[in-house]
Amino acid sequence: MSLRQFQIQQQASGAVFEHPEEIYPLASHFGSPEKEYQAARESAVVFDLSNRDQIELSGADRQKFLHNFCTNDIKGLKPDQGCEAFITNVQSRILGQINAFLHEDSIWIDTAPGQSEEITKHLERYIILEDAHLLVRTQEFGCLFLSGPRASGILQQLEIDVDSLEVFRQMRVKNSDARLTVRRVDWFGQPGYLCSLQYVKITEFWNSLLEAGAVPAGQQTFDALRIESLYPIYGVDLTDANLAQEASRTAQSISFKKGCYLGQEPIARIDALGHVNKEIRSIGLEGSWVPPVGATVFVLGDDGPEEAGTITSSARSFGKYPAVAMAVLRKNAYEPGTAVEVVAEDQKANGTVFTELN
Image (cartoon, rainbow, N blue to C red):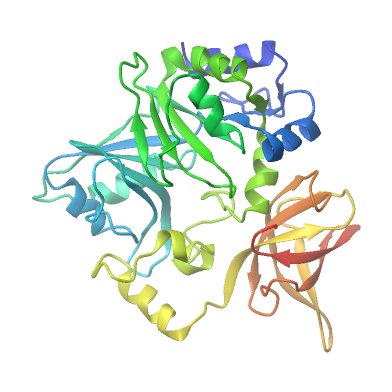
């Protein structure tokens, strides 16, 4: 079954697609974004993330090679361990945002939608004498993301024992005819499992998760949760204009003990300075207006409103705030608790900056 066939089947089961003309649309919601959001916080939801890219890096030099071109400690990984990292250029600007998991004979790289071509093109430039080979596996493997307080229990019902699975560890499910691998990634501050498997079995696994109690959820809820958890997406909130430390993922993605790698020197200098001049932040908004991408963020200064940044993504929410947004904010506004105003054309809303919604 192709990805398109899988998503057509989702539509038949009640999914609403925001852009049905796209080749691989993501479901905006499955009937009630409010119920999906509540289920994500109280039980468990499953998202179709089959638009995410997957790359397999093989060869005897795979760990050493990737270690030299990303911000985290790849050489220190043991089989079935993983980490989050940025691939950077020599100026430490972000070229890719990855989750890397070590297998016995390869490294599997999960990355943002549409990023595999640029990442492989960049890395292949540096393969000279190294035994390293990159293969994009996106057309063969898709991802479902199960998240919520009951996520572990739902997998247990399917006889997938994840009770002892720590964050950034993976489990390759034995005897799975779908080559199912379950990766623990708590993107939303709660148990989260990124399930990679062959497309031919993805609908079957989706239905099994629903039968075990997971609630299907769409892009609206996914965006609300990731914004509230300050989880930016490359190509949406981050680009190659951003320095690694501007992503607000330093603790998760950057090792300061690993030694030299491409972009290491600027990253070390920024760390010595103690701050960057702008960073990704989330904003909780008063009122139900969801600002568009590109809306301007202002902070009230001594001489009146000062421009502080630009909205990169936004979503309707059903938690503490009725709407939330993510923005690249300058230092004059990125401290948590800062009051801001978001403006787009003839609409505006007051908001509060935060780094993670409690």
